[in-house]
Image (cartoon, rainbow, N blue to C red; front, side):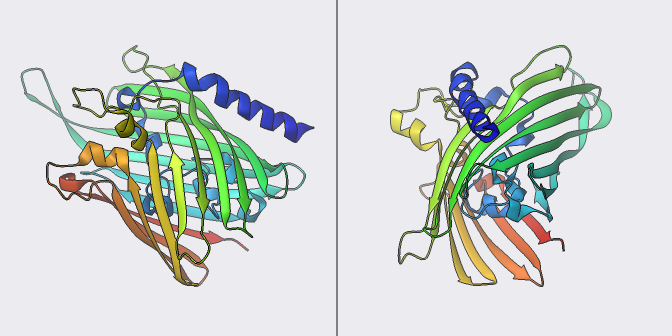
Length: 328
């Protein structure tokens, strides 16, 4: 009965908040919450919520990824972000009998030393800026193949003399059928509000509803992943765009696509494509790799090591490394 109530509550959140929070993320704060938390997902194009064989490393994207097989799994990720920015993730999970699988994670973003100027351009020295989020989530198995989870994030941001804190909630469901190489999921993330504001002004948090699935077609080498992001926000106009995008442009900007092939038990190759990132970072060249990502997965003496690179065209590329291990 408790499991049924959890499922009903999650579905109610999906339906009721999809219209209430339908705003563009281009004007949102705490954008570090949108950074893909693992090199595996980054190589597959981004924040997939129905990824096949997912684990607690991705609890930030879908708390239902917390299943009993993730128990005692610990992981860490490092992102060499643009300019001097550095972003890190660390998390672990533990299955509690008759309760569910508990996951705890930390996200940190540091933006290096920034210059402070007045309105006349005079140098006033330097300052530091950073973001921090603590995540706690719990998931339970509704059936042998279906799980449901929910989580809470405590967020704090510090930019020189300006600070802001917030609390948000997340939730999701996840279906995994290993026999048919199929999985699917739906989740909502960043549902909440600021507890205190930068300089007294309230701003939107990047709320997101996503749905996706993964499937390996018979006799095909790649496990394919497809996710539809920002289902609560149809308008995906990019910064600087003066005209309304066409129906198909808007539709494709919601799509994240990726594939994974295993060349051996210890080596996997991955690729991905994020259409919105392509539109945001592309140049006027006819051939542009903006939005394209590639990566590999390695298994070395009990460690799973994932590497990825996501292209931002002329801006550069984001390199990410993730390491995870099952504690005995």
